[in-house]
Image (cartoon, rainbow, N blue to C red):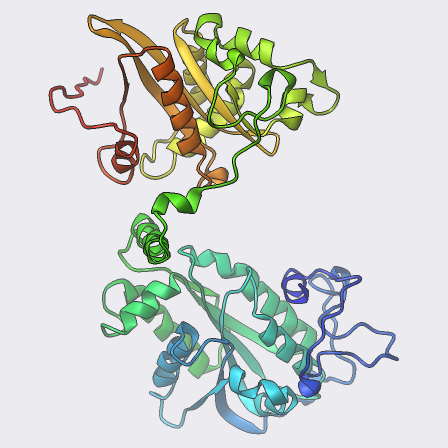
Length: 475
């Protein structure tokens, strides 16, 4: 908790952070009136950096001018990504005649961090090589930095080589910001950072191919620029490197496949990963939960009464300050309502603007699209409420053919912030159950031909139609 708050320059009022490592220096003397270093309130941080008492940056002298230390701040073994990137950086730093670069593993020095801080103070340049933890630095690294604040002298120049598993390298901006403020506080010179994203991918590829090939090319080029800045001793802008010619959609697909493999190893199906406790059975008409395994009379009569009428029957008068009472208490499924068309538009635009559709929907246009469907006398739909807010919906219309009435699912969308919780699955299952009760001859839908969506619908009995094709003409 302290590490997270420190990363975000917050202050912990009533929680003590303790350690069994007596020499870590993490705790301040009990008789000290000043908080332990690194735990000052936000007012002492970014806007008005405070130098440690007795520290005069102008008088600091490096014990070994020109010596560089790369601190591996990861708690993983030496085969971790931080150690791997540290090794590459040391190789490139050693390319300059007379340059000396040493790698020190924080994990091996946890029992005597005071001595480690003294060793780091002897360097002319210190490079923190760390993984991103909760948008910031690992707690062990923060503890070491707190100890370094108490030293009368330290490294002249600070660099940061960070890596993380997320795809967007800009996610590391907060980590760099935290180190910058720490340097200002200590009187060190922050000289720049390099953030490498998709670390697990880059690290895995480095085991099978030279660093600089394929998806590692951009990281390799950035590493060279970073190393040149260190060797020259100049300050440089922070660098951010993402996989080269490797789309984000590919990365996410590969990353998610790992969860499927682990599920199978533990006797589960991929669908089991999205299971959640089902809401308790109750009556929608009084604004409480509805179980996924049955529709009440209000929902079943939706097609005959229309969405607005059904919603009016289901929702009591609004509670002051909370919208409708149903919105305040309901967790589960209920009929769609025209009153929520704007919210449906927001969800639709957000969902279909992402993978695999990537359609540039405007929420206002999406709201009009939804309203036109709701106005149909043959429309039917359900919404899923999570934490008092609509998180997803399914909506369609039925049409009579010579072989019977068929329901077409026009929209099935879930707020991206709520995806991965089985909401689409629950909505689809409930809709199919109701259509079967109503004697529909079938259910149709149109979806993306590639990607995971066809497979998702095939699990529920949908199949590709070979006898028909979708045709269109632009005007």
